[in-house]
Amino acid sequence: MVIKLLLAVEKYVLSKLQNILDARNWIESKRTLISKYSSDQILNSDHCSFQKEYVSPLTLSFTGERTIEAAIKRKHNVTHSYTVQPVTSAAGRLLNKFLLVLKEREDEFGSIVVKNMIIPPNVIVQASKSGKSTAANHYIFLNDVLHPCVHKKFLLFLDSWTIQTNQNKFRKVFPHQDSQLLIFLEGSTGHIQSQDLSLLRLWRYFHKKIERYTHINRTQMNLNDRQYFINVHSIIHNQLSAPQFKNLIKSGFIQARITNETIEQIEKPKDICFKFYDLYCSSQDCDERTLLKCAWCKNILCYYHLIEDLHLHL
Image 1 (cartoon, rainbow, N blue to C red):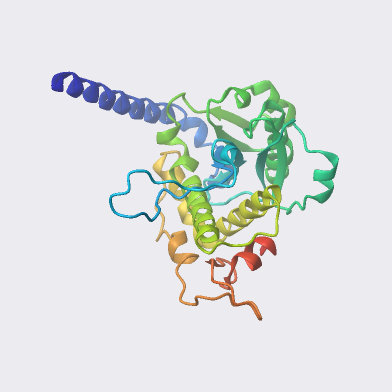
Image 2 (cartoon, rainbow, N blue to C red):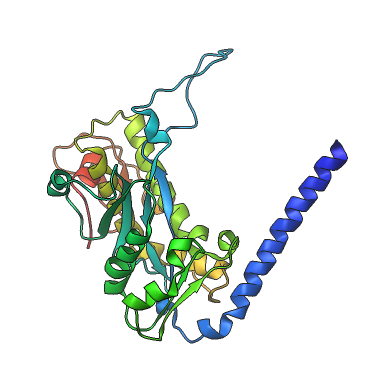
């Protein structure tokens, strides 16, 4: 039994090492093409899914209690998700817009929903039955998210998900030959996709901090779920666009070996946005507890003045 277990572990480790080697070899095989583009022209985009309702992995209980239960608003909120898709450059820039795909019964929002939604300028909001990006959503991503933010010459890295590997669809939006799409080797994205190595970890960290705050403080929300998701991720995108996080975004491309650059000190969100000594919001006549210190203006903000009032620097 022990021998079988050791053999299984060895096989798994060797498989992982082979994946890393294949990924690095693939990047090296594209080195000539990569060298034709500046760091500002080298782009990466990836999808990141979030549960509709955050459930803390920790809770208080009495010693010896066998069954520990936790309450949630709706059961399907922890089994269904929605998706964000930002774009970053090897120069450490987070492009001006990102795609947010919300789960709806149909692949579109109802007329009343559209009428009542407030869409910040840094978000393109779409719908799908699964909450994941579809072929139609991907076209919107290319046309409405990427196209306004790039010039004719750029190199875009995407993973091997079927809906985004079609070169013909890419060419319909970007006919210029200096606009190139590279699809990562299947199974390699955990090792050479820059957003997996940097940005999306930061994005999840921000999201987790916001969700924990609302749970711990039992925050009374004045927004419906859709608007809450839109506002939260608009804020996260805007905060991560701050100059302090430039090197952190760059580091993902360096770790992926897409670029080779020496960067200075890397500043992290926990030090920039979540290290503060003022326990209460700095907004006038507000006695709510602090959620975040803005990376742009350094103001100390609560949930209401950050999320519901949409504290953006654009």
